[in-house]
Amino acid sequence: MTPNRRLFGTNGIRGLVNKELTVEMAASIGSAIGTFFKGGNLVVGYDARTSSPMLANAVISGLIATGCNVLFAGMAPTPTLQYTVKDYKADGGVIITASHNPPEYNGIKVLWSDGIEISREQEIEIENIFFDGKLSYAGWNSLGTIKPLSGIMDRYIEAVKRHVDTAKIASKSFHVVVDAANSVASLTIPRLLREMGCKVTTINANIDGTFPGRLPEPRPENLKELSLAVRALGADLGVAFDGDADRSIFVDEKGEIHWGDKTFALVAKHFLKENPGEKIVTPVSSSTLIKDVAEAYGGEIVWTKVGSVVVSHTMKALNAKLGGEENGGIFYGPHLAVRDGGMATALILNIMAKEGQPLSKMLEELPKYFIEKGKVECPERLKDMVLEKLIEKVKGSNLSTIDGVKAWFEDKSSILARPSGTEPLYRLYAEAKTAEKAKKLILEYETIIKGIIDSLKSS
Ligand code: MG
Image 1 (tube, rainbow, N blue to C red):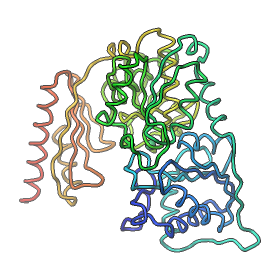
Image 2 (image 1 turned 60 degrees about the vertical axis):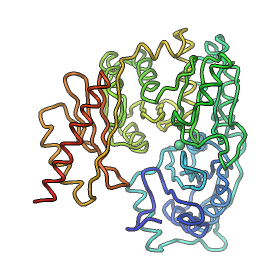
Image 3 (image 1 turned 180 degrees about the vertical axis):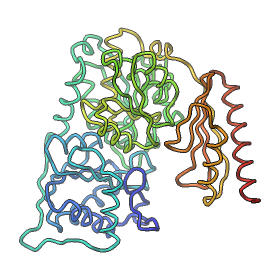
Image 4 (image 1 turned 90 degrees about the vertical axis):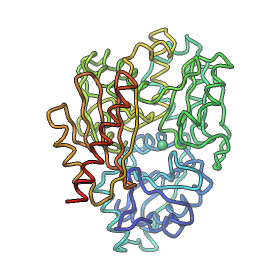
């Protein structure tokens, strides 16, 4: 699928079905995963994609061939499967999902016994087993078994409810519109909300792996229907999920769509009010808003590289209880240090119930920032040298070089320049108190990076 002995990308194995990711490969990958786990009990489940049952069956065959016992969960949201691994004290898990990618894609995620995705080092072990063909097959009399699981949605819903004040939420009789992206969010979210006393209206709730309602990435341009529905129905909240329900994007009662930074900052603010001094883990691409909230409410920000797995692993290492991403991923450690759209929705409703204020008002009270994006073409071979020179240029300001280079300035503006992992590009993200300043920063850094590239090319 990818050259140089790599199977795993930033979020598991991903590829075009029957082209980059075939049944034959899925079976071999299953056996490589089984060899890595050396037997044991693994939870296996999948998302709503048309290819998911096909690939799941192949992976399961591969796993039991190596002597692994499969706890078969069937179709379920990613966060439910992650919780199930922990809940059933399984040795790990495998999820067939391509998250927010278009319907022609699918993928494979591998979980450790705590329900969190395995580390990069563990992925390399599986890649080595796969590419070296060192599959360890079991004898005919020690093959694995398949045991179907039942009731995992109920157990997950009960677990989420334990972390919020359900009586308080029920007392408000919130009306929530759920956009389930025609996928697995339908299996847990409407029930979770009804059990918390909410009135629920659903759109795109019929499960259909062709995603007829909208693309599974919950970007603002895909959520116009949700925004209109919230306004037309006079609902209190709208929430949209991605294809495997680990990310959630919220719409306020006025129909305004809010990007994940803002709702994460709101959750962080309320979490820090009750847990002062705690760590908040977030990628360096997140808004300064999170930093402002942490400073105002006595929290400590831990910046990470971009990617949900690194947020989970950092939370695990530091025993941090809250993490978040600008794309709508919220990680609530007391439940499980993975992003979870259901847990995030329960936390937002909990805040709305406690504060007795509409979402729009609470988000309005947060500091405001303007965001601009840009990009500069950069040949692959020059990327590292460009970064070195760029760090020289911005030395002296408040810096992080954990992923690309991010600089925060006195006037609360900031810029992040990151080499793209997939394209010959540098990506720029600027943030400032005015739109003009953010644009100016992008132009300034585009010029600086172009200058560095030109000088490197001519030297
Ligand atoms: Mg996802």
